[in-house]
Image 1: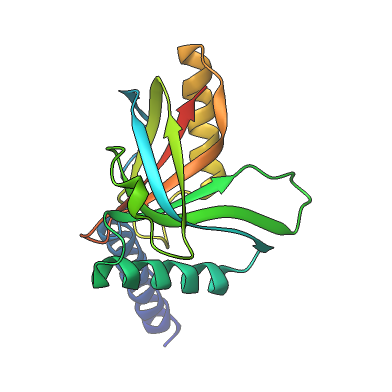
Image 2: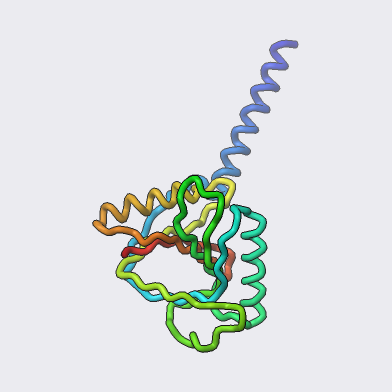
Length: 178
């Protein structure tokens, strides 16, 4: 009887390990996080700036509001969130969320209630976030990898991060050189 329980327990444990491993693999857990260095560019973001308490649900609401404005045609481009660096112990978040385009044009046609920001750089450090959020790298890990790559390239990064959201539901994160 004890031997049968041991065999069944072993089979269950092996099955759980196989299921866990295959789920982790399917979600992209084994894909490496690579930092790509790209040439500089200009980007215009038309949106709204916020200084708010750190709240994921509120940020998600702002994302969906912006996405709805893009889907309705009021804003043109893709969703971008520009996170400005904050002090570690700060309980507020400073970000600018809106639609981005890499071509500076039509800034005279900014809808009421929105503003625009222009960004320029000589070098872009980019990470494509292809893993599922359950197994993906954290924001801190991604930032650290980009900072290491910037040091290797001999540049200092600007004090903000771009999170870019694409139509196919994928996203990327960028840090720009000064």
